[in-house]
Structures are given as structure tokens and as C-alpha cells.
Image (cartoon, rainbow, N blue to C red; front, side, top):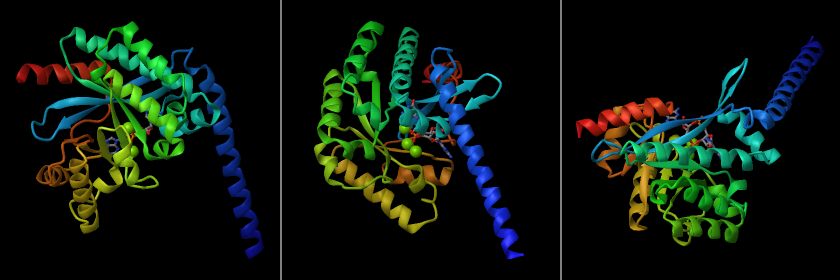
Length: 280
Ligand code: C2E
Ligand code: MG
Ligand code: MG
Ligand code: MG
């Protein structure tokens, strides 16, 4: 009967909810120990200059290697880390590890920028700048080789705090990009006021640029606007040659995506970049 069907559906639904909440609680408790147990690792995804087709930068992306489970992706644990405040120590671990990698690259005479994702909670943390500064000094890395990626939601949260952090970071030589551009609460007014250098066009706009007239128009407009504002543009999630061609034709500066490389381990990144270095 319809009644029984509904009851079954509800039971099924509540079972799913229960499992999801168990999963969340399990991740939340284990995440607390993940840093001290050395379970986090970083992948690097190359970002290519679209004029030269050389790797000019890499985005640092965190993964969690759980014993008995394997790799847990950030889509599963970043939100939990934000909700519990664990994003603060996690974010510091990521920044420190990225600086370590940068140092290793510098030692091999490889000058490549690394960009690091920051969550809204991190850009609101007034102690984060001191941490950045002291890490750069301790690791003795070139600050102009570091980039911070913030999302639009970070930028509208608390204007002064965020403005101060980004301004100080840029004063130190770091650059700043707006990640997932176009997906947030888009007031374009902040673009001219904020201390930023780069716009990263979200993958959702790039996906259909070869076929969808609206997406073509949006991406062209974003590139033109960014260049007028003296900002560089990176396209995210480039998977096909047609997308690449469109971006090149429309003077997008840089791109990242599976077409060029997935996020990879540091050792593999070093191999990849070394072969590029030798062939140039
Ligand atoms: P994001 O910063 O926008 O990073 C780009 C995401 O797109 C990455 O997912 C990357 O693997 C994926 N991607 C790159 N190229 C392609 C492509 O061609 N096709 C498709 N389908 N996907 C592509 P990932 O590594 O799973 O990270 C997801 C999100 O988690 C990131 O999005 C970022 O918001 C967050 N995240 C990752 N690492 C960190 C971190 O260290 N700190 C913070 N706060 N957030 C992080
Ligand atoms: Mg990013
Ligand atoms: Mg992004
Ligand atoms: Mg994204």
C-alpha cells in the first residue's frame, strides 16, 4: 500500500541519515588525531601558462590518508574541519608543508609558485598572518613564490579582517587569487577594492565553454573585466582541447585541469617539472 511504501521510504531515509551522521562523527573524531598521526598529505596540480604551455605554478591540495580506509578527499573533511575549528591547525600544517616543498624545489633550482587554499575561518584568524610570516622566515623561502587562494564568501564575511590579512600578505610579497570565481555571492564591487591579483574561473563555467553560448559569454566577459582591472585569469577544470582552444583564443592567462595533469604526489611533480626544465 501507499502507506507502507511511505513508511519504507522514511525508514530507508532515516537509515541513510543515520549512516551519514555516523560517518560525520567518525571523521570528526579521527580528524582531530590526523595531524599528529601524520596522516595528511599534499598533492600538487600543475597550472600552465596558456601562451608558453609551460608549468608556471602548482595548486596545493590536501588529502587525508586514513589507515584502514585509504585516501579521504577534502570534499568530505574540509567542511567538518571548518565546523569544528580544526581547519586552523590543519591550515597551518598545509602552509608549513607547502613552504617545505617550495624549499625543496628551490634547492633543485626549480622556481615554481605554489598556491594554497584558505578557508573563510582561516582568513578571519588574526594570528594567521604572524604564522605565515614566521614560517617564511624559518623555512627561508621566497615569499613571492607563494600564493593564497580565497573564495568569494571569505571576501564578503568581514571586510576589515580579511582586507588586513590579504594586504599584509601582499606586503610580504605573496600574491592573492579569488578561487571558484563566479559561484559566490557576486557583488563585483569588491573586486576593485580588495587586494587581489588573480581570478580563478570556476570549473562550472569552463565545463561547457566549447558548446554553451552563455558560458562562452560569461567566460569572455570575466577575462575582459579581469584584464581591465589588471588581474590575471586562471581557468579551472580544463579537460578538453576544445576548452583549451577557446581559452587561448580569448586570452585567458593560465589553466589547470585533467587535460594537463591531475593533482599528483610531490615526487611525481618534481619529475614532471624537471623534464620540462630540461627541455626548455
Ligand atoms: P579548489 O580549490 O577549487 O580546487 C580545485 C579542485 O578541482 C580540486 O579538487 C581538483 O582536484 C579539482 N580539479 C582540478 N582539475 C579538474 C578537472 O579537470 N576536472 C575535475 N572534475 N576536477 C578538477 P579537490 O582536490 O578534491 O579539492 C576540492 C576542494 O577542497 C578545493 O577546491 C578546495 O576548496 C578544498 N581544499 C583542498 N585542499 C585544501 C586545503 O589545503 N585547505 C583548504 N582550506 N581547502 C582545501
Ligand atoms: Mg583552489
Ligand atoms: Mg577552485
Ligand atoms: Mg572549485
